[in-house]
Length: 300
Image (cartoon, rainbow, N blue to C red; front, top):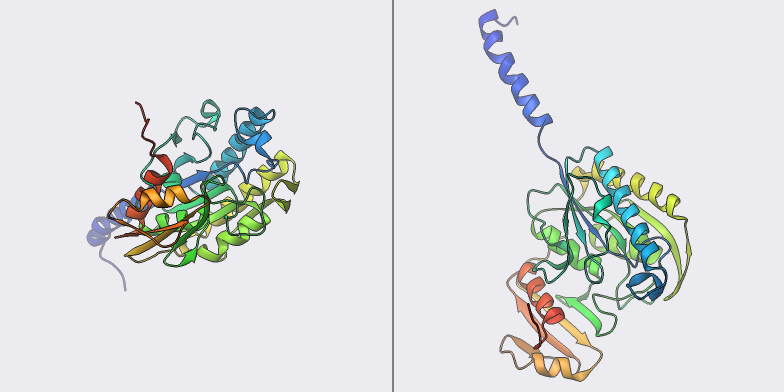
């Protein structure tokens, strides 16, 4: 059927405008970057300012973040928000990042390692992640605090940081599409996200030992895996936990559980464990951040 010329003149510009609007639609990617899962990192000598190799590890971390940024952009990402999610939250060398990238730094944050994420993001990426405190494998395996916590459960299920953070992203309808870290961490995160591209940058031997890739090889692998993940974001499914959400935290020592149980919103389950029930994962996240950050001698 032939379309009258006058109709074509009216319709075609609208179609072109619609296609152009679709082409310009922002593709926002959230990248949460930890340090224990960065290639080359194995002990506290790389993880904090007192370590002899910390300055080098900050560079490796920054370079892996840059590789993830480039991989996301190779797949069409137009906006990037980075979360510096390790230690004091001030590890990334931000003067080396592209000028249009934004960075979340320092603590406390209501959404912890996922601060700033919302429903406008198309995908989330985890870089430098490690396995959880209940995992018998993995370099520096812990959940949030290796010094204080022995278990973190959501609705009765042990979760690592990757599982907790995937649930926070999922609350906003955002899927996790790629992860990097050691072999134990990548396998563990996939339990919550389903099969996603994983950059295994080292093989865990023990808590403080690994067979590692060189920094350049790690960066190349991360760029490739993140590109694949962002490209496949349409088939990824957010990990969601419907509310109410029951959190159970187990501490190495008695006193934290004892004192937290003074709060009427907290139940003491046993000598080392407390329970908190939140309306959703965001409320649970805020409670965890309170537990991890509050101290009576806090000053501005």
